[in-house]
Image (tube, rainbow, N blue to C red; front, side, top):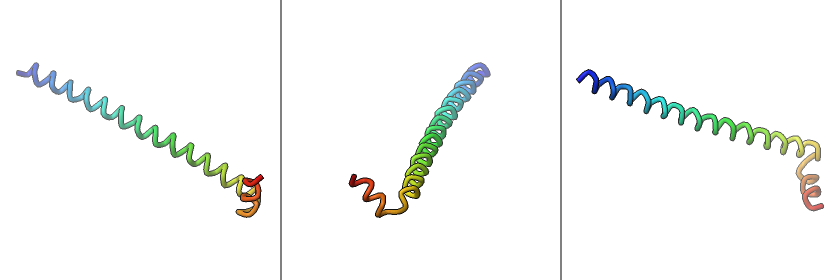
Length: 63
């Protein structure tokens, strides 16, 4: 009976390990998305500031 409990315990540890690894990958994906979003929004803000405002942005886009 101890062998069965030991095997079940090892299976549970493996399952928990896989779940933690999957959770880590999900969190890492969100962090990557957040970093990309931050970079894009920073670049957009920098472009907006260089152009000097919304009227200039509209004129730039219309060109």
